[in-house]
Image 1 (cartoon, rainbow, N blue to C red):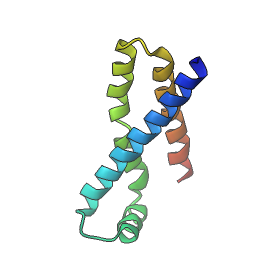
Image 2 (cartoon, one colour):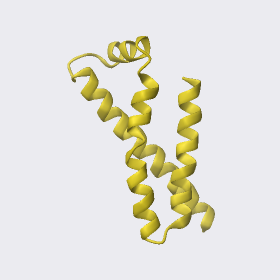
Image 3 (spheres, one colour):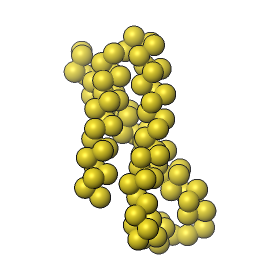
Image 4 (cartoon, one colour):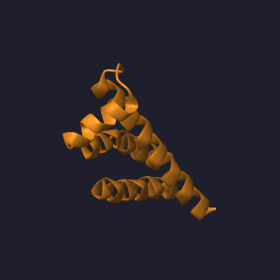
Amino acid sequence: MKKQDLFKGLLLGILVALTCSFVIFLVISKGNTEFSLAYQYLKANDLVGKVITLGSIPNLFLFFFLLNRGKEMMSRGIILSLFVLTIFTLIL
């Protein structure tokens, strides 16, 4: 059961970060350009990593919420997702 909670936290953390990154991506691109053109703009200005980092901020609130609910293993999964996103950002 504990490994399942860790995996749930990992998936939840990655899902929240990617969702928030997508929302920030839409705000930056002002919603009126194509996805590929907006991505090329972000890549050319080295903003992709910064958008992913900003999208990871809500994981902080999710971490403390799960910790207060007594879901320590899911909180550890959130931290693990931040490590995974950090490595992914470094690769990009």
